[in-house]
Image (tube, rainbow, N blue to C red; front, side, top):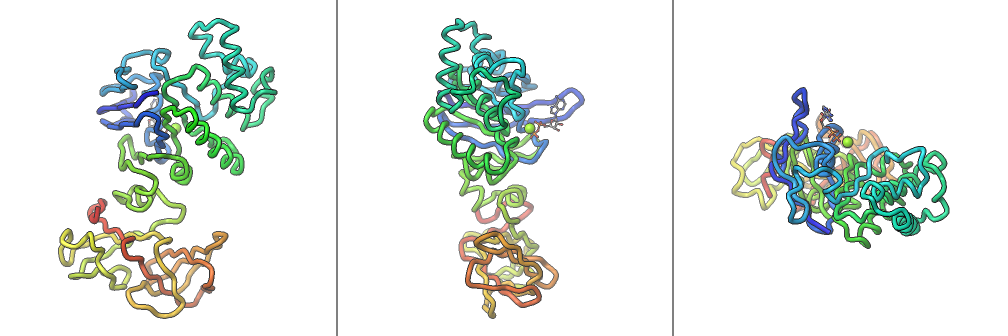
Length: 356
Ligand code: ADP
Ligand code: MG
């Protein structure tokens, strides 16, 4: 297995699109690493450049102790799974799985035996003679994984491998893929535009925007302490509250509420400075009766989240979202209070986190 190191990696396409912009990234040996970002930010280009399917305009890619920047794909020792699986429709499951070994001129007997082993590990035993058109989406996805695994690469590159599965199968495939990767211990870069998938699966996440990395961290680091407003608004199943605010001595005023200044922000902001006050809906405690140091407003919307509700308070024209647990029954039109939890408030200045 092997670490992957990218240094100042840049890809400019003919026509001028800068899909990767002097990007630095180090994925540790054996890590399950998620690359997360909106459509068009350069995720696929990054994977294809590591795999050698695109040539870097400048910068370097290392896999283990080898500089692979100028090596052809076949000599990089990577297995890649594409979003659409890219299986050969006219070949059987066995031949699809064995294909990379055929390219490497592994003898027929040997590659068929290896394909059967990997197929068994992925629960594809009974399907070896079928063609892709005779398989379900989930089975096709496993064949694509098997093909990437069969040649025992040092690195797996997975480009949105779950996005063509329906919601239920996607959850199963998450668990399956994570377990498989743990057993094999293969360094894996997993691309997704789905923040929940990245949070659920990855050891670490890099959040990308326009060919650059905006934050790298564990799921809890990027969720609890987004380093900038881009990451703050991209991560989370409910939208983070990001409110225009102003420092007032030891306090901060946001949406008409006067609230304590977060401890870590003391000494880092000046009086009357404009900031953005960030707090996740999960970190506001709801009250149906008046409390101090709270956002107070009219209940505008109540959405059912299953065990909890997402309540939108209209606080003098500013909307504040609160996740409300059992035991409260907020009703549209009534009044509600939302108290920020100490230690969970983030202040941003010029888009960057102040209280790092
Ligand atoms: P993602 O996978 O994050 O959606 P891509 O890596 O596919 O993003 O694309 C990044 C940017 O590069 C986009 O602006 C896209 O239009 C552009 N791009 C991708 N492939 C090519 C190509 N072959 N030629 C020109 N532009 C491309
Ligand atoms: Mg893509």
